Image (cartoon, rainbow, N blue to C red; front, side, top):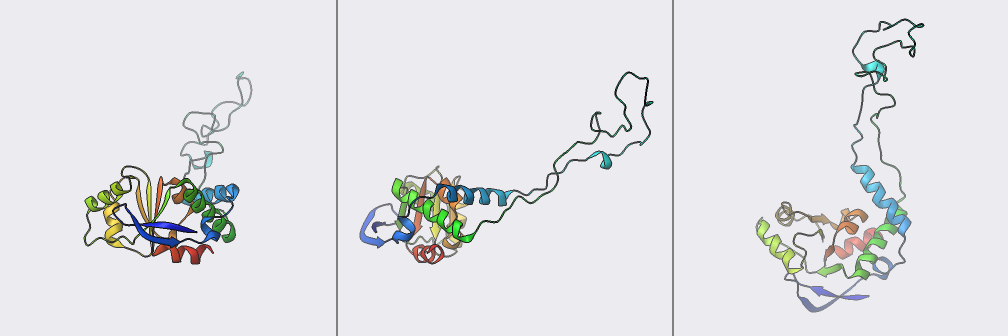
Length: 208
């Protein structure tokens, strides 16, 4: 399919860009979409949570009261989890939350995400973006042209562009990534996805 190409000022040019139907016009797969987002969020978790159990609490090992005759439950250690200051029973331990997801499923999910954005009119193809210097003001004006300043926006560039990346870093909701790092979570979170013309070849190579 062919879509309009926009310039960096947010105006439609006379040029049309060809998008691959195998990536931008596929049948939506919601389950693959869900799994890829779940994988991304799971990989963000550090899993370093830890609480002390009774064997790790500092304290006396003396039996705190006699076994029978007290009228209450028997107790053998002040470090038991039933007492204040004791260890936590079945507390969290360090663990890895990541899981395996096949590459084919991840590709299906990302194709579905791009297709959904295009169908909603939230995906725009524009000319390659470049700045001569690092200025947040320049990127703010750029986002204003596409009416996404203050909203979640995703700019996908063909290759690393330090000036563009650093100019966007201080703006809330603005994100710049390389086409090779494109993922389902960032696509779905953005109110508008801005694809640079040069990034299309990389996306097609990775997702075809």
